[in-house]
Structures are given as C-alpha cells and as structure tokens.
Length: 186
Image (tube, rainbow, N blue to C red):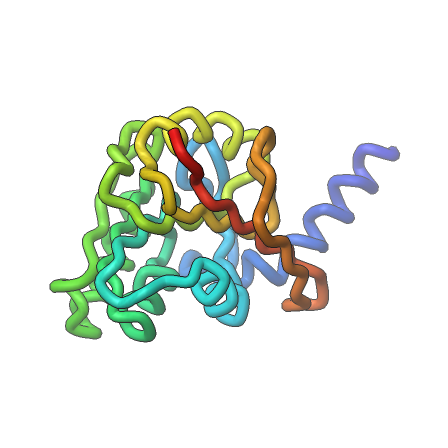
C-alpha cells in the first residue's frame, strides 16, 4: 500500500514534466542513465548564464533530448553546440528542428552513448542526469575536460565535486537546482 502511494505521488510529481515530451506526454527513456525530461526554458536560460558561456565556445549537452539547450546556446550565445543522445527518435526530432532553424553550421547532434564520447573539445558540459548517472560519468569528465571548463548540472549534483555555485529557481511549481562546477588544474 505504501509503495503504491509513493509511486502514485512520484508519477503525479513528474506528470507536468513529461507532458512536454513529443511522444504523447509519455516518459521517454532514452538510455540506461536517465529518462528524457525536458528542462523548462527558464532553467535552460539560467544554466547557460551560470556557465558563463561565450561566443565561439564549445558546449556539450549529454543526453540532449529535443535539443533545446543546444538551440539556445547557438542562438543566444553564438556558441558551437554538440548534443549526444541515445534515442533515435529524439535525435531525428532535434536534428530536424536544428535544420529548420538553419543552425546546422553551429549544432551537431550525435546519436550514441554519452559514456563513450570524447569531451576534450568542450568548454561547457550541460547535464540533466540523475546523481548516480553523474557519478558514473564523473571519471570521463575528469579525464577529458581541460582546466577552466565548466560543468552545469540541472537538479542533480556531481558527488565528490564541490560546486562553485548552486542556485535554486522555481519552475513548474517546484524548485529546481542548478549546480555549477569549474574544472581545476589536473
């Protein structure tokens, strides 16, 4: 009984987030690390501001979903943006949207496992993965990212790292956290 109530409560909490997916409002599990849950645009905007993204820098969005972070980075900051997404339908949707907006010279979307991506070109990495997934990804971030690179995570911390900044914003009737990390000397 308690488990059923907990599951019902969790689903009602997540329902507004899933309602924005392109697939009939159903959650779209894109890989083994996290479902596709789109970040509200105001959170995307604040994450990019918090990353201190500059024109010409390279941003990676790991688990890019519908590409909204990539599009905002290209349009508002004139950044080069690379998205990594496992789900073929989401890659097709995001790629079509990028082409429609004529941003394909600034945005590349790769279909693949984010655990197998060379992040060396990245100045900024955006994450909206669960804490456990961030923990699994952390060795790759440490291996590939240069000093001065920034990692910005929506809602979930990167365990073992100390954020330089944490911010809380309200969207969709709940608080969202933004964690900002600066990669130091290796």
